[in-house]
Image (cartoon, rainbow, N blue to C red; front, side, top):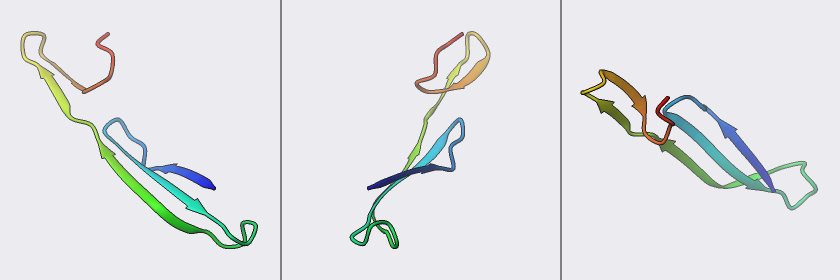
Length: 56
C-alpha cells in the first residue's frame, strides 16, 4: 500500500491510496479523495479562518 497526500493548502488537500501486486514496480490507485474546508467568518471580530482551525 502507498498513501500520498498532495495539494495541501489551508483549505484543500488530496489523498490517494494505491496498491501493488508486483512488489511496487507498478501501482493501481484504488481510492482518491479531495477535501475542502469551509470558511467561517466572525463578523463581530472581523476575521476569517478555515473551519476546524483553532481561533488564536
